[in-house]
Length: 251
Length: 113
Image (cartoon, rainbow over all chains, first blue to last red):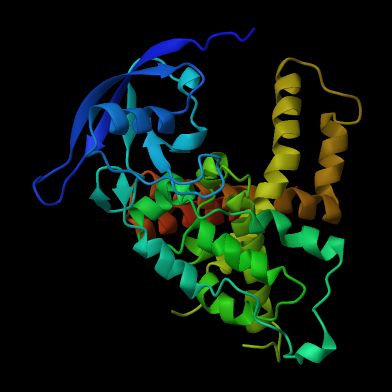
C-alpha cells in the first residue's frame, strides 16, 4: 500500500516583467495546490501549466545538474529544483537572480558572466604540443584530486547573485570564473597560469574579493569558490614578491 | 589591466589573520583569568616581564601586536567597503595609519622594558 502524498496550498509571489509592455517589474501572487514533497520549480511548472502560461523561467534537468533554474527564493540564491517547499512557510517570494539584468520574468541575461568566463581562458593550455601518435596526456589520481572540486561548477551563477562585491563592483571577474581559472591553473597538463594571471591577479580579479564567503555558502555543487580565490591570492602574492623583491625575478 | 599591488597589504593581513586565530583567543582568555585573579603558573608578572626583556620575546610580542593590528585594519577596511562605504582611500589611510601608530607605540614600549 502506498501512502498518499500530502497536498498543500502554496502561495507564490513571483516577480513579473515583460519588456514589451511593462515599464517596471511587479510582483504577482499565485495560489497553487502542490504536493508537500515538491520543489519550488514544480510549483512554478504547475502555475505555468494550470494558471498562467505567460510565466517565463529557465529550467532543464530538474536534478541540480544543469544550473539553469537559479532564482532568488525568499531573497536567497537557490536552484529552484533544489528548493523544497517543505523548507518554506507562508508566501514564497520568487525573483530572478540578483545582480543580473532581467530579460523577462525570472529569466536573466547571463552575458556578463559569459564574457568574463571567456577572459579567464577556462580550458587546458598545453605546456607542450605533442603529436597525437604520442598518446594522451596522463594524469595520476592525486593530480586529479588537486583540482577536481573546482571542476564541479555547473555555471548556475548563484555565487554571482550572492556576492556583495559583484553587486557593488560589476567589473569584478567574480567567483565562478576565477574558480575555473584556478581549476586549470592546478591542472598538471596545463601551462597557462601566466596568461590567466594577467586577468586574475588584477584589481578586477581576485583582489576585489573581500572574502565574504557567500559564494561558497550558496554553491549547490560544493565547489567552495571562496577557497579557490583565497588560494589564488596566496599564489598571486608570491608572484608579486618574485616580480618585485627578488632581483632577476620574472616580470 | 595591470596586475595589482594589493599583495603589499594583503600578505601582512593574511599573516595577521593567522596570528589572530592562534594567539588572540588565548590572550583574551588569559587576560580574563588574570582579571579574576587566577594567573596560571609560569605566566606571572615576573616571568612575563623577563620574557618581554629578552630580544626574542620583544620580537614575538611585536610580531603578534603589529600583525594583529594590520590585519584588523585591513579587515575593517574591507568591511567598510562591503557595507558600501566607498571612500576607500580615506578609510584605508585612517586605518593603516592607526595600525602603524599602534605598531610603533608597541615597539617603543617594548624597547623601554
